[in-house]
Length: 338
Image 1: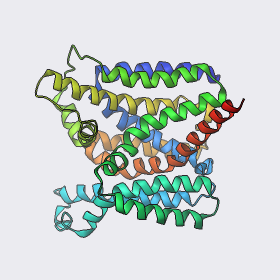
Image 2: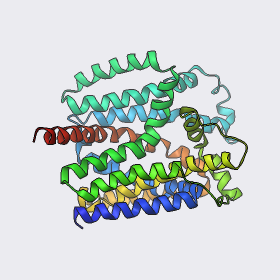
Image 3: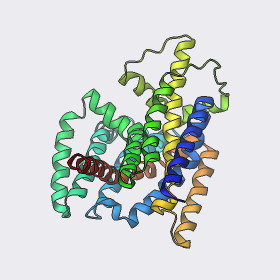
């Protein structure tokens, strides 16, 4: 399939994601995150490995792995502390200094991951990157109690910025690189979809089943909705308009995540992430099947078990995000000089 054909396909997938997000915002997100998400993590991590993670030194893999484990350790241990089967072994976890340390430092870990990605893209010697990482950690230490830092770095960077802003930048880089008009139309359409959702009037309110609402609560993504309202000073009224506001936020989250995944799966003929050996394909298929089974068994269990993998793919994608921004700047500079 040609590049322009894939660009048009992506616009079609974008419209499909938009329609579904407006019709079934909660159900779409839960499905996409549980079914499309794990397959995306596994295939992208494997593809990034073949590209040396778009960094000049593959030490970036171990740095991002450590950061992912640190970020994921708290929700995993929180779940064990609240589980009837294991709570007796974690009675002191809630008030432990380690719990408090990880909670306070999580935004800093994410900030360090972003700066580390920039460093590994720029420098080929690991020791230089470690100096930059130490410097970033020091800066983050003095910023990590700032509300804006916690909100934008700790909450939005690995979630909505990752799935919406960075996806848009990746699309823009590809469109500029291939000089594709449909690609540029796709980038504009992505922005327009966000505007449309923000102003959509839910005349007919979607009916949310008890099972869907329960799984939504289990997903803990209610915290992302709350952070969204706080960041943009959105007041949720106890009225139909208040319900519409919640639906708009949820529809945007569902749209952003769903299209992020579909955009990746549609690029097979361009970035060729699907060209892998039978052994790797079998491992990916096996892990994917297990992950779906976990989500089906208990959505919260699936979320917790795969939390580290989810964050690991976010961290490993940072160098690619940096390369996309770098490519956009270079392309725009070249156009300015011509």
